[in-house]
Length: 214
Image (cartoon, rainbow, N blue to C red; front, side):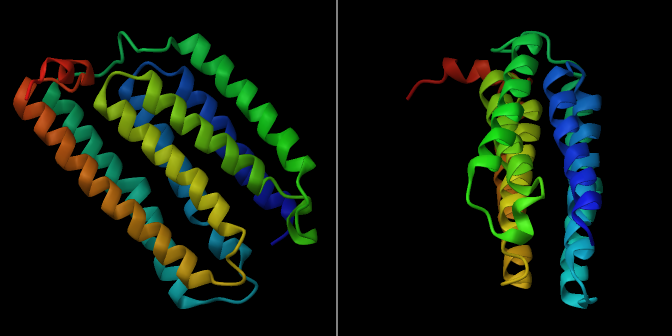
C-alpha cells in the first residue's frame, strides 16, 4: 500500500484528534474515538504486502474492541451516570483545541527533522503518533469526567499503536498482539475504576476524589 493512502488515514486520525479536543458532548467524543480506532485498526492489513491470517485476526480484534466493544461500554457508563456533556473541564475547550493544533504542527515539524528510514520518510506515522499522544495527554489532564479521561487514554494508546506500526515489518504479530493486550488490560483497569467512582459518588466527576481521606 502506498504512503498516500496511509497518510490519508493518518490525516483523518489527526483531524479526529482535534474534533475530540473541541467536543463537549460525550456521545460525540466516544464516537470520534471509535472511528479513529477503527481507521487505525485496519492499517496493518493495508501495510502488509501479503495476507497474513494472524495479523488479520489481531487487526479484526483491534477494530472490534476499539470500534464497538469499548464504545458500547462507555455509552452504558454514560447512561448509568446520566451525563452527556463535559460542563466544567479543567482546561477549556478552545485552549485545548489551540494546544492540540499547535502540538500537531510541532509533531509534523519534529517528524521532518528526525532521521527516519527511507520507507517511513514520506509517511505521517511519526507525526500522527506524536500528535495522538499529545492529544491523549491533554484529554487526560484537561477533562474532569472519567469517561472523557478514558477517551483520552484511548487516543494516547492510538498514538503508541502508530509508533508500533513502524516496526510491523520486523515483528508484525508481536507488535499487534502486544498493543492489543496492553489496550485490553488498560481498559479493564479503567473500567473497574470508573465503576468504583460511580458506586461511591453516584457521579463520574473525578474532582470528587479529592474528598477521600485515609
